[in-house]
Length: 214
Image 1: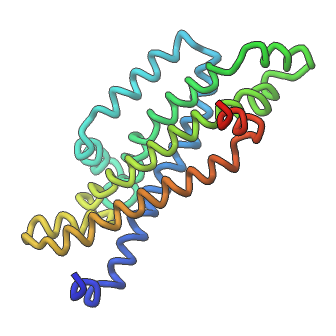
Image 2: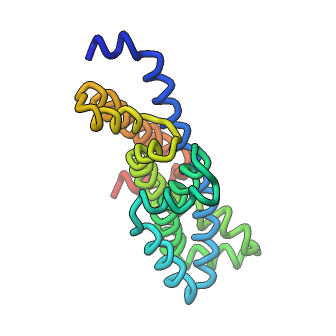
């Protein structure tokens, strides 16, 4: 393994960055789409079950099938990989956003309405802040999954640490497999830790203290 690092250290750093970059773009797209959609579905509850069900069905599709589906449309490389991973990122964030916002105490919403807050102000200042712990849980789960799934992106020429894993499998080289698998695990653990710290920053202090006391 030491010999592998001495010969491929710089390339390993490039592959690690590619892997993180693909995963990060996919999860950012998921956040941008899934959180507003989750909030919107709390205003259309009859539609919510259908939409979440459709997204859930899409997530049951095999990862390679999703990647292959986008090849005729977007070709090969990082773009189809990011789009495919984006589809996998949506469900946990969407479901948690819908559940978190739906679970906000209705008395607080009525109080905000009584204070003259508009619908947008109640969403921005009451519902989303109080639902943040649940939303962040969905983002953390989705991110960790995506970092693992991003290894499959190498099948369509997107690069990343999956290149080492599949090359090692094809050549029966355990050092290549380890060089791909260990950084993926480390990235997932570090990212989850950082998101946990971010959650502590964005969760309202009063709510955070209440949760700790409970």
